Image (cartoon, rainbow, N blue to C red; front, top):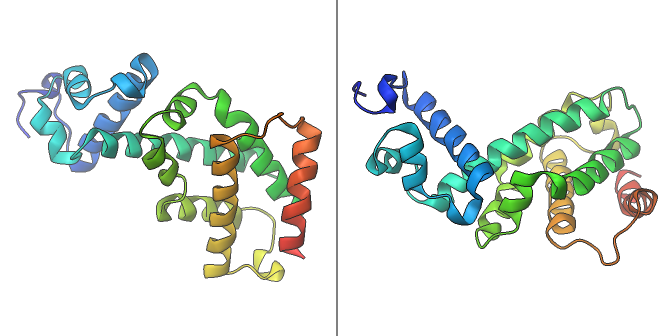
Amino acid sequence: MGRRGWRGQPPGDDTEARKRIIDSALRMLERHGPRRTTLSLVAADLGITRPTVYRYFATTEELLAAAADVALAGWTARIAELTAGLDDAAELLVEAVAHLVERLPEEALLAQLLDTDQGRSIGQAMVLPEAVARSRAMLEHTEIDWAAHGFAGAALDDLVEFLLRLIQSMVIAPPNPPRSAAELRAYLRRWIVPILS
């Protein structure tokens, strides 16, 4: 990677290059929205050519999916902070799911990503193996003994995937009329508690 491009500060390796491109995509998404964010716009922001971006991301959709995954990772970290100290498995899951369902639509970037023609690929990012693994790791770092509830290995992955799909569907197609905070939590308890019994 020569000194031309990257505004005179080339990345040290491909991992750093990908990170810079994704970070730029996130900035462009915030400024311009998903419909107007293109590989050309990202390339111009970084001072590189489109072929350089293509080296790391074949399409705009692929780049947007990577950006969405980074944004979702931030949400996973927030949920870990929110549920720290909860020792009741059902309440932890209800609160985590409710928080995401309530807050994701208010997160400008994620709301934009979920409300575009690329919504299908972005929505898929929520249930990719990487997202499941990241969310499973979050659950494994709580005070809950998931194995005692019958969730270890593949079974814990299945639980996480189920919860992510529940969140995905409730965010993409919210109930009408909307549920209050108490109604949402009661609804979630009705379906989550039996899974843990």
